[in-house]
Image 1 (cartoon, protein in one colour):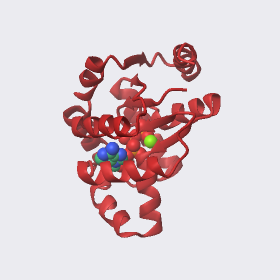
Image 2 (cartoon, protein in one colour; image 1 turned 90 degrees about the vertical axis):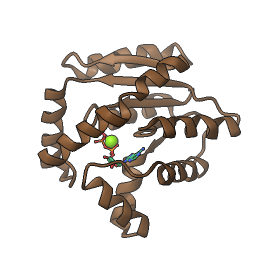
Image 3 (tube, protein in one colour; image 1 turned 45 degrees about the vertical axis):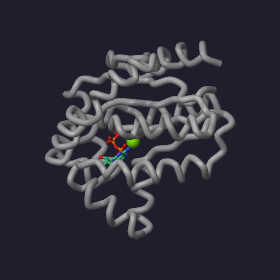
Image 4 (tube, helix red, strand yellow; image 1 turned 90 degrees about the horizontal axis):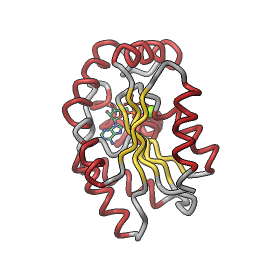
Length: 190
Ligand code: ATP
Ligand code: MG
């Protein structure tokens, strides 16, 4: 499979759909949120830095994230394609990813955008707070993450559009329906 960038607001299901895509196409998976949460759990210096941003609902600085992404990518097998989940989140990160992959003679692949209404997003994140106890899944921080998403990440959709990579899928109330639509598209790429 080609590389896939999965893109969407907090709670849009990037992690959930990534897991399904990884199983079906046997690819690698980089979730920058998971990488950072593992660092926090391990009590590393990076984890301490990450926590100070994540708890505020803010993005980590681009230079730091780009470095983390490249190290993670170079440490994993890439032959079957990789799904990027949670990266890029800014135009600078997208430009850096493009350059990083070009340097390695790897293709950017395609972008899968998940469009979900904000009422559903909020309900999912509040539910996740109960189920997983993520520190940033409280109503105040969620609101900040939505604002950061609209200001810094959403404009990236246009960047992908210009690159001819953007493929949009809209939530209509059923996970299997959405997953079926995503698979139908990805199957055409194999
Ligand atoms: P989802 O609910 O769809 O899994 P999310 O947006 O709620 O997504 P993560 O992707 O797990 O959550 O990210 C959690 C936090 O980690 C972000 O709010 C941000 O602080 C930090 N983070 C993760 N990826 C990046 C990135 N590429 N650039 C900057 N900060 C990042
Ligand atoms: Mg996630």
